[in-house]
Length: 267
Ligand code: 2AM
Ligand code: CA
Ligand code: CA
Ligand code: CA
Figure 1 (cartoon, rainbow, N blue to C red):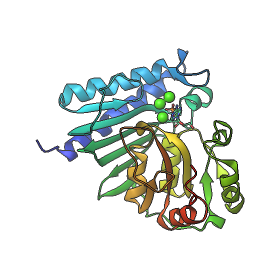
Figure 2: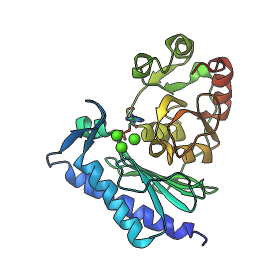
Figure 3: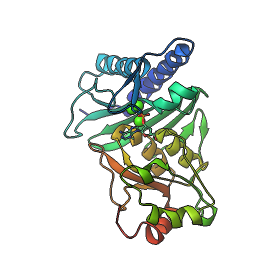
Figure 4: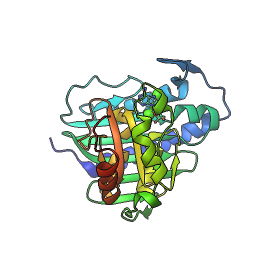
């Protein structure tokens, strides 16, 4: 069976807009918030309901498609054959709870392990970022230009300071020279939005030691489609079946940071 990418794309867009409408409609209501692995690892009824909404739609239309979703209502996968929807129903749950902004729905659609379609929906701003392999990236109807290459000295780099404390996954002694050399650092608390910001040029790079496939499945397609590079911190490929460290930037900046700051491989 050959996947009809155009049809899948049309349905996905319709469903993600509908899911966004439901999330916006939930704002006045009280959230049911629960913890997962620790006191700061939160999930709400809206995360769960949104994932279940997508699963019902996908399974109802495409019973043979499989789903990898953060909240666990999808399938258990150990390979990526066929059509796989990689879904984060709300990326940036803490922001969703505390700020009602800086969160997004993220969906990557992979066929036999190859990323074909990526959607990241900034629900609050009604901004739908949409990549189709070989056809570029759009924000709503507007086509995004290719990434600009900036030097480290002119770059804004997304980095979360938590990672220098938590098991020192980003070693301060390795990171400090890069932080010092860059124009600035930022942290937004939503990997999907940080990847979108790299795609739009609001950020020049994003470095983080641990993300799940649903955090990055859509966003890395956008960055790559615009000429950027997405690897792990060692410069190797990203695996959509396990957690990865992630380093994303325009190609020149990626090479410069890899060579001058991440080269030691002590990550
Ligand atoms: P979430 O909001 O969907 O949980 C916060 O800096 C970013 O890291 C968010 O994209 C968040 O996604 C993600 N995140 C939170 N907990 C994580 C974990 N245990 N492993 C990997 N990514 C995580
Ligand atoms: Ca989560
Ligand atoms: Ca996430
Ligand atoms: Ca999530």
